[in-house]
Amino acid sequence: MPGRRGAWRRRRRLEEVAAVLGHHYAAAGETERAVHYLEVAGDHAASVFAIDEAVASYCRAPAIVDQDGARDAMANAAVGLRDKLAEAVWTLGFLLLWHGDLAEAQEKLEVSLAIAERAGGPVRRAVCLCYLNVTALRRHDVEAVRSLAPRALAAAQVARYPMYVAAARAGMAWLAWKDQSFEDVVTLATEALELWGATVADTYPFKWLYLGDGGRRRSASSRSASGAKMGHG
Image 1 (spheres, rainbow, N blue to C red):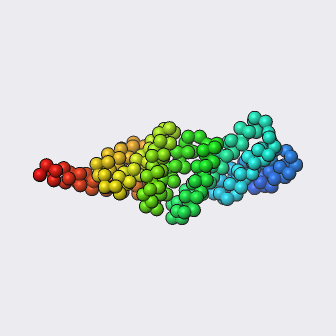
Image 2 (image 1 turned 90 degrees about the horizontal axis):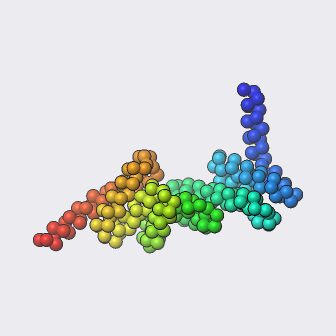
Image 3 (image 1 turned 60 degrees about the vertical axis):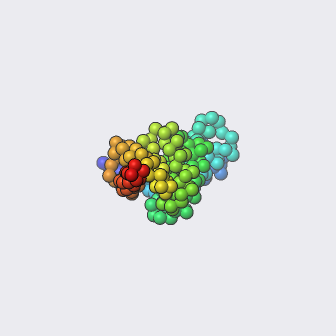
């Protein structure tokens, strides 16, 4: 047990000084070591939600690789670091979104998306577009949702991420409600509810959309039925 505690303390100490070591090795021209320690620093900062510090380390490491013109192995490492950078910036945007700082959230999520477009995989792109769409929904920005929802849906389908497919359809149901296309509300909201019901728990962060679209679906069904009766009357 004492040996394990000692190893844990040494590892924690290394994580705490990793950023300093990374900058030291970068100044000495030792690219591989610099990138390693900056990645360690970024991972540690991200693990304790010191997001600004994580972003600083994840930004610095790929820049060193680019300046050095390093070999393929280091170039591949830089791609991985950019994906971690996209995740760190996204995390900051996500926290700002649910705190209600919507303009700042949009800015961070757009930066994360730009990084993901360059170096991230389809899942990262889908996640960024999903939460940009949620940000637009929270701002009640109809035209932004009109632009983002189809992109979010396409990205979620490429990434094969059903709960984000549902989120996009929920956004499109909201848009249909604003356009008074009540039959589309019923169809889209039903699809979202069915997907969420198959993939997520009650604590899912889109719960407010889930409940909202349930209400919209019932109201839209009623309005569609009323319209049909009037049409046949």
